[in-house]
Image (tube, rainbow, N blue to C red; front, side, top):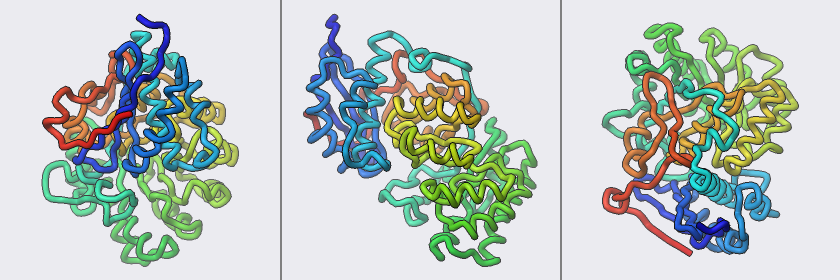
Length: 398
């Protein structure tokens, strides 16, 4: 076998079942294939990868994750989760996968762990078609449709029944977002009494159904201003949420710091924050009780583990984001099980049981409210051998 880890080809796959998803396959000189992915703006990320990232990777004799991250660092796009960051994050995930395959080790061991063999999960209550049609995070892109596992419609219209169902399955946590439409109506600057009452009724029904047997997370998607966020958190306090997520945009550090100082409700933030430098200001300001880092959007696993270490220095646990794709999910599970400050892992059962399973094999096992990282080398996820037969895809290579 060659000592070199040189990349010989970059291949991208866009599946029609989830148009926002882009798989990235890095082929090395020894015939191995590392799998990464990007989510949102798949066509734009694909163009960047073939036009910019691929030639840079081909020029490296030994593209380790750290070396490639430095080589691909862009003069533009490094302060946000734009095309360059998402593309580089996809490459980074694939390089870690290759590194694990060459070493014969799963990512948990490459990252210095495991610290634990399994970790608790919660269910984010989306449906199979959630954020599928556009790149916008809005109710028009919720993708609600009749059918099984339509957890978004369920939490809005039968939250108590859904909570009981999740508890029966073994889940000990669930996340809902019953205030988003109110925020859209006013651009987050006001909420009337009826909207507030309707949103709180969802949480009341959950608590009446399962009591405190389910931890409750409330997602606000960064849609509110400081005044309304303060009002909402004061109302939410009585439900004893495990956290309230992104009450204000995470780049509004000063406003978030004021909010955190004005409430005892734990605040989670970080899924759209880019890298250790993006998290540093939030952590220094004492904002997050929980860091919800996304291992792809933040720039890849290389950057995500740096974020985890930085959060640990500040006494903050991580709860990695997953509402994007199967490779990101697998890498997140390995990370949260490998670091000391791993708290809980997000899952979307509607994704795991539909389009994740339609496209890949080797997903981490979720059962009885826990997830276990795989023991296969790398992150363990691979495209199904028959993925071109079971899913309509567009393939490009360089």
